[in-house]
Length: 239
Image (cartoon, rainbow, N blue to C red):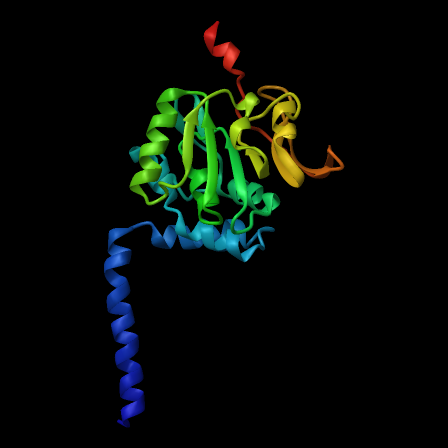
């Protein structure tokens, strides 16, 4: 056999050999690839950076261990404390709508397990996340640190109030439904910034909105029927 084909064959064998330990260490690699191909590319997720981010973040590490085999299914899953992790498509859609660019400053309201924050951290190194429930905030911060997303800043607080000392933000994503877009979040959004937020009554069909800030006002760009857990004001936890 000529030398060039032999060298090419060796290169292929070495590349497969090198990839084997990585796949062995992550038994869900194939599931994640299928998720991206069928649930995201198979629908309307077209941003290559979002698709790449969804293909890198190990969603099974952000759900309870006994639910890991379902992590890449097309469904939301419970994460404890009455909260859920959104289905992969909704996470990807919200991320795509937010149009996050490298260097953008992004606020997430509703850290939950930390999965959405990790996806955002794949796109920019400036991610801030607020979680009302201290136990979820602590667990998410620890998980993000362990998985290499330690640059994400997580704090316990009232999502309705936002994070004023770090404003303004290029994009804000809210992962729970409010009766209307919180005014404090609108105020903390840059001119031209994007606010992605589900709006509507509790335990009923809501509308996921993409709002852009134009001349100081929020202008609706897109909407989609959804169902999210409610965004609870901090005052309600003190009753």
